[in-house]
Amino acid sequence: MNPLFSLPLHGVFCVPFCNQNKDELPIKITLAFSELAVDKKLKPLWSMTDAGDRYHSEVNLYKKQPPKNEVGFDNSSYYLNVNCQGNGLFEISKNGITIDWKDHGTGADHYFQTLAIALNLELNNVLCIHANALAYQDKAIAVVAPSRTGKTTLTAALSQTGFALMTDDMIALHEVEQGYQIYPSWPVARMWPDALNDIQANVNEPYKKVHEKFEKRIINIEKTKGFEFCNQPKKLQVIYLLNRLPNTQNSNVPLCEIVPIATAQALIVLLQNSILGSCYRALNLEKSRVAALSKLLSKVTFKQINYLSGKEHLAAVSEMIKNDNAT
Image (cartoon, rainbow, N blue to C red; front, side, top):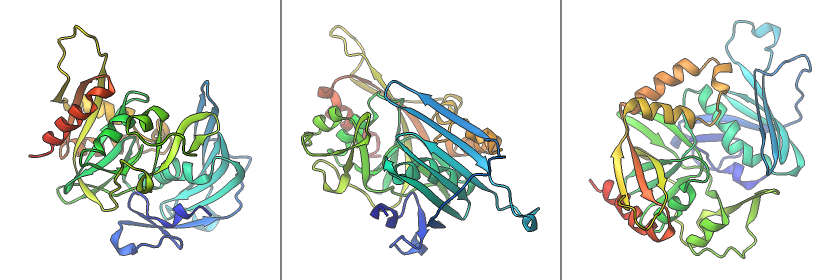
């Protein structure tokens, strides 16, 4: 078993493996490793296929039929079948996750820390968003951006100016009194080689690839120079949407500006950056999630960062974000 399973993840304590005091975390689940089999008569509630240039992936979600003596008892569980660079099956309910994984390819931990734990959290009414979270002093900020538009690189730059990485690629929004709490993920991140170059990490070190055909590398944040990891929960202060602009010589566009986003636009951005995509409709959670996201936006500031492309600007952009969180 990967030792990462002994660490808490997004506020979830996994029995019997987690070594942290469960009273410090809001959700406790049972984690098990066992053989699973999907009834061949079941049809998928939801499917996701990505036939990209780098690799082919397919994810299917099935609802497990409850035993006859549990009719009317709402303890729904689901099978999440993953067929990508790693292959296997998760059985997921509010109270637990069971893993049945093939030995070859990408390990179960990669999919557990995103798809599986996100489904478990959403069943427990905890919103999950595709974003990075960083701690600054006594607060947390979240960074949202489309793929390959600078989120990883800017996150790395922020980590060199007083911010500490809390989560990579996903945040779980635990509602608390007067706001939302962010709990750290595992202390690992997935970074492109050029982002590692930008923080002057040694890209010649044997960083393992996320997938065999995928150039992103897995790094241990606590052991990588230029990074600090925050292992304590923080209250979410602001969500930033990145908007990286072309860097043209004669441009009159300012190097960086931070502007508020209208609530309606912010809601669309958050819906577009849900971890499980269109799966929520199949789970009958779509309506409640829109209401929950609207509530989030009434309590957490949402802003857009317009900034010029180019690593020579990253230090200045990072300083502006720091100043924006100084008040």
